[in-house]
Length: 233
Image (cartoon, one colour):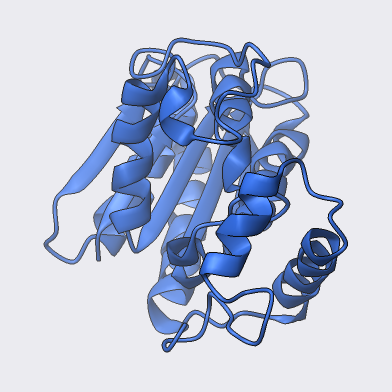
């Protein structure tokens, strides 16, 4: 399996270590591609809307494209983030902001409807579940139909300080989670289909953000009977 890891921090912390643990079990001999934020994408969305008519007009297109090209080619996406103030890290949020055109309300990518994803966050105390939700919500709107979330309080500031008992628990949890990911086939469920149909009706009614987006949907036949999760679409 082709695995892409996107870390919401530059340092090798607990979330990163758990993400790598999952990737190692999923890769099946394939190399793992890793990106660290903000090292590999150190910009905030400026709200210029240049990406709406043309993705290449984004002032940060080159950095963003390098990551998203790997994302679209992957079988499994793993996102990790520390929990900062009960939420995902600022670099991770910035990355999600810069990829908003991938949302079904704009220009969804066909490849996303065939992917699996794992979202991981650790916290010294509470908030990890809120942090993973920030990311899983974005992935849902990307069209990713199979998203697994893992948030855990590690009672430590770094992986070295995590107790052996807690590490053993994490190891068992990740083994169980990755076994499920390996075993189950990707199936587009009612939630993904429902969101897609809602956005389809929005585009048909000219409630989208731009004429270019409607044209994007028309060119792919999605305003008719073609669907991005079908092999013949």
